[in-house]
Image 1: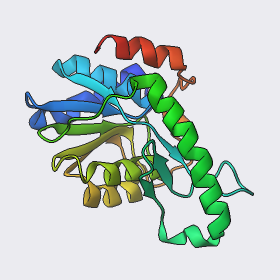
Image 2 (image 1 turned 30 degrees about the horizontal axis):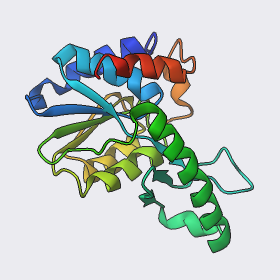
Image 3 (image 1 turned 120 degrees about the vertical axis):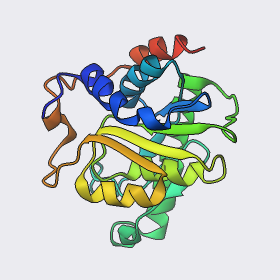
Image 4 (image 1 turned 30 degrees about the vertical axis):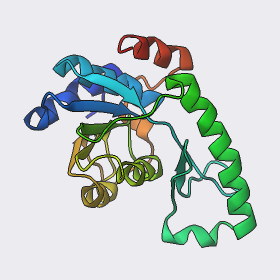
Length: 206
């Protein structure tokens, strides 16, 4: 199945989670593409939408290859294999660089306000999950903030679906392919979402 765009994907994904929606549900989207998906879910159920920024950690010799991820406040996720790709010095350098970048983007999208998630039924949303680093770090980040967290994405690699089931109460997906090459393969239109588009969506929930 191919989605025409993120709006189509978000609308289809929204239908998967009707059973868990209640008055305390909050959609927590990962910018930028996840915000478009999350907006469709929030509109469908008349929910609030917020964002959490995370960014992949990449080894110096392969900046396209994500090994772990970090949130704005320094929570990190690293798979056991990270020692193959980083020295201790290169890892600390990468963490320092990416934390500064994530802090800047977090401020841009939601300012410096604190999260209040203690009594929330949180649904984390992204536009596709392949290696999973950026959502696995959010799972770590949420551990101290709420005991009710689900994850939703239109397309989730089959092996990641199993792992995410161990990290979240619920995992929602439209497609769970076993032969996963690229998230963009599942979208007819997968154009990059701009910061301005994200900010325009978030203004609707201010």
